[in-house]
Amino acid sequence: MNHELRVVAASLGLAALCGCVQSTEPTASAAPAAASAAPAAAPDPRVFDTWVPGPCSPNGQAQGQCPPGEKLRVRLVPVAEGLTNPRHVAFLPNGDFLVAELANRVRVVRGGKLAAQPLAGWPPAGIEASSLQAVAVHPQFATNGSVYLYYVKSNAEGATTLALARARLEGDALVDAREIFEADGWIRGGPIAGRAAFGPDGNIYLTFNDHDPNNAIADPTIRIFAQHLDRDVGKVMRVRDDGSIPADNPFVGKADANGQVFTYGHRNATDFAWHPATGELWATEIGPMGGDEINILTAGSNYGWPLVSLGRLYTKGQVSEQHWYREGMEMPFLHWTPSISPNSLVWYTGDKIPQWQGNLFVGALNGQMLQRIAFDQPAPQSERRDALFLSEGRRWRHVVQSPDGYLYAATERRTLGTPPDPNDATSGVIYRIEPAN
Ligand SMILES: [Ca+2]
Image 1 (cartoon, rainbow, N blue to C red):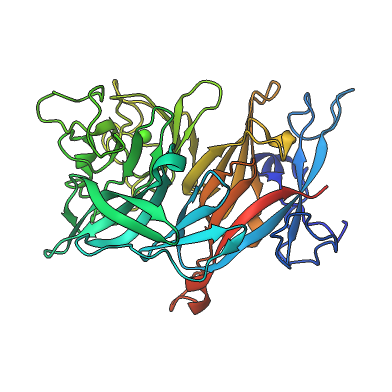
Image 2: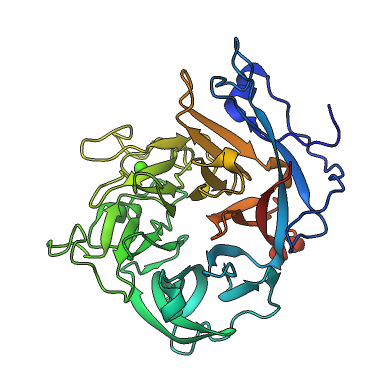
């Protein structure tokens, strides 16, 4: 094996079946000396060989007269380092970008350099933000300067919900930050998480997990709220850019239903990606033990949780007495068992790595990989999933495409063990993925 190369783009399933793909080398070998051509290249570029199969070579090997595929060398360039729990990246039209850190800080990377100080003005007096989940930039940012913050809000009783604020970016400050929407999800205890993104329709799509304090036990009392339309937990919501409810939301005017609800029956929907050709809304969702999902969301649909799931509860029990399928509930388009914890997804449409155009990239937390999913592969394998960058040992929190056509990803490390590794706290890195051929 060539020791200069770390081969990490193995198709996991095929590798397990036939052993036909080289395995990952966990040790970090010296990267080639060639420096990145990008202006903001960091001193320690990481280079990986990946594999793009030929058009009639579904398993990555030559078959008959088919071309065997192509080696694709890519480099992970750390653009911003030392971040604390980065959760979400949002690009400005000029290529600068904002990073939401969990501890209520909005960082800014201008001209490829991380500003030392977070943006001033968040959270402002009067907004009870206890942590920051996402930051979104208005599609007309160039004229209105609007930036949105999606955050966890706490009350005096120790309960939490999610809320959305709008602010204006002026220089290095967020000004006039005002809460424009509060989700109907006050619950004491339980994990809480959400994402915010502008859709192509100009509305803001919001996720809210099931917020279930009983997620380690069988008691379904709280998680069943994911099926209740008069609660926002276990939902995807859709609001206008001023926080009001679009008149064409599916449950507007219905009794015992919140107008902001767009889809329901989610355990932990984590991110959105609109299909570049069809416009469909695809969403990652973290299941319980197994049963992670990608769903294609349509207004008003029910995605099953906590009655239907391809995973099991942490008790190892089934989620319900009819867990495999129910009439009127949507099954996932893709699923993973065992879990990889898909926390983000993006379609690659850029020109920087043409071999990846049309592929879906999924960032995984406990799977510690960026997964490349290629569709419309030749029969008998219509879909390929390749695990990238496993040797980095990182949790891939958010993956996004920049205005100039690169993939960027917010990552962090979480070492197992007690007490936690103190270095993990500032292990957040934003990578840019560049071709390195
Ligand atoms: Ca589901």
